[in-house]
Image (cartoon, rainbow, N blue to C red; front, side):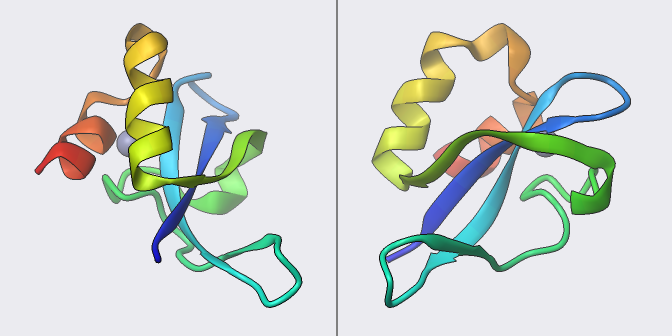
Length: 79
Ligand SMILES: [Zn+2]
């Protein structure tokens, strides 16, 4: 099942969504080096705000803080 991290851009402070995959030990491992909107490299982020969320969870969380989250990332999830 797909899992996602919500990460903060180090340059704009905007939040972007990154795909991860669940490891056997229960944590999540980064799967993609760019955000789902393709705009932000993982090396340009400075920390994970919300780790290892399911698609349903990240849609719910992003809806609460919509103004801070990249609209293209949200579109990707709802697309
Ligand atoms: Zn984005």
